[in-house]
Image (cartoon, each protein chain N blue to C red):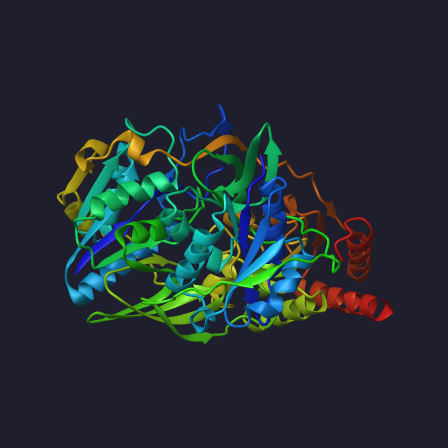
Length: 257
Length: 325
């Protein structure tokens, strides 16, 4: 089976956000594989181990993403592709990213494409479905179970807490929801092997794309932090009295009940 | 500049989701005096149409087709494209719901347009429509504008104030017939796992439990409190990882990001990943044994104490209130 995983490098979930010069400051920040993409990588490995084939993990970004691609290879992916847009793309949105990935994939005849359902930084959740649409294949988002039997695919999809049991067929793009699996940690032999696995670096030129072809349709004009909260009120006294006071405060001061 | 804007309304458990009205309100701002047309899909669509007009839609277009009774991206995609071809809107607003998140990127791609998802505020500033949306799970926000193509946005439930309901309003309701074919994915079955009624993302009140809840049974007092307040129950990752509850309840950087009017955190320490999912709630109450817990830093009101003592007392107090009112 020809399997592709779409991966994004994101801020570590522990990172505090600092804004400098109208942008989120990345200096000194720890980066990780987007947590939802880890589920996608793990699922890809399980599908390949069961059905055979090869996994290519793809990212669009700059050369710093090599580190996360190597981690994906150490987990068990077979090949990695970095589409480096640092020199070519100034303003990038989901339209841009999807167009670049689809252009790369269009002649690769993928059977299965996996991605995270959302990235924890930008949080738009668009790239997966956009890529599927550009490739003309079907997709299912926020999946928590995937079973492949020949060309027939049975999926459990999380819909705001409820589950849909969906029947689909290959080729297919799916996006991973938490609960799909338990992503493995790279093993030491895995890390050693990953160093020798192929990591291809491409630029827009290599995909016969011009900067204009992928020009963003939206633009960020400001980034800001939420207003700082003032210290709250810790109630005192007997517990029963505190509870009574809390209910009064919620009614008369906060006016939310 | 006035624009025609369409919105997609959603039905859940036999009634229109509140986010459908919020989408109409956002569409009004985008339309700048232009027409707002609400779209409803499925065989029973007609019966909900007037409600959309009471909430501000100028007109309603339905596509009544049995293949649209349950959502699929192919079916809804074809129906919406038929509506878009006939209406030629310059703006489109969906709810940022499971359906909206799944469908909007597909349509935006078909329309060769951008998409600003998960919008929490819309304003007109200096001739531009400016959309505010959370990034880094609410640790920061960005303001975006659309530079090319259709103005397409999804709005996060519970953030855009709805317009006042007015039964005096009237408008046309028309049915568009669309040929829905070749559904590549089929929904075989829907398994209901959430409690009837209140959806976490749309709940006005959320009672959430963390590791301090100690067991699946430990969620019972939280459920009782949520019930009295007409709210929903949520959880921290700690509680989900420990197996006390389903991951579908998880609130945080992974999991759901929520903005209710009232968030009651019970036995939640307040890891940064959890705060990212709830710190934009309007009012936060923290109940925790540990007075040093991080959650108190974002709480408006805090009670240092055992949740198993505090929560039942709270439930009793709210019950008394209900009886009196």
